Length: 252
Image (cartoon, rainbow, N blue to C red):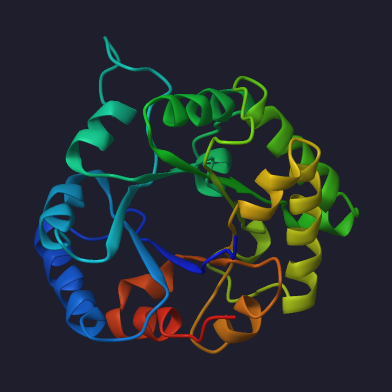
C-alpha cells in the first residue's frame, strides 16, 4: 500500500471559537477545488465543535491535541477519548513534546493514552523526539526507540491497529531550526525499522510525520524523502495561505 501524505495542523492553545471559524473557513475556501494532500485540523478543545461543523462533508479530518487516559469519572477538567469521538474527532495527538516537557507527562501516562485512544476507535498520533542535549550526546535513536517501546507496551498493537508517529525534535519546535531532509529521513527510517520488529506490514503502512518548523519553503524537500509521510505543523498552520501552501505540495 502506498502511504499518502498527511498535513496536520496543530493550533495548540490558539484560536477562540470565533477566530477558529474564520480560520477554518479560509482553509476550506482554498481547499475546495484544489489539489492537496490529506489535511487534518487539531484545534483546541473549545473550538472542536465549530471546526467539526464547518468541515462536515469536506475532505478534511478533525483531531484533538490530547485526551485523558481515563474513560470517565471524577477527573475535573479532563476530556475523554469517547467525548472526542462523539464530537467528530478521527485522530488525537499523544505525547506532544510540550505536554512531555511543560505538563511533565511520563512515558507511562502516554502509553495509557495511546492504548485508550485505540480502544475508543481514535487514531493516535504518537509524538516522539529528543532534546538538544540528547541530540548532542548522540542519544536520539535510543531516546526515540524507548518512547515508542513504552508507549506500545500496554497495548497489543498487532498488525491491524492503526496509529501514526510524528517525529518532532524538541530543539526544532517553534525555533525556526529544522532537521535537514536527510537527517530527518535517517530518524524516520530508524522508526520504521523499529516497527518492523512488530510487523513488516505495520511498518510499511504506518505514516510517519515530521514536525519541527515545517514551512512552505522546506516542505517539498522533507516530504520527498521515502520515509517522511507528511508533517505536523504548528505555528505555520495559524495562517491559512501559508498552511495551504504546505498542503499543496506535490505527492511523492
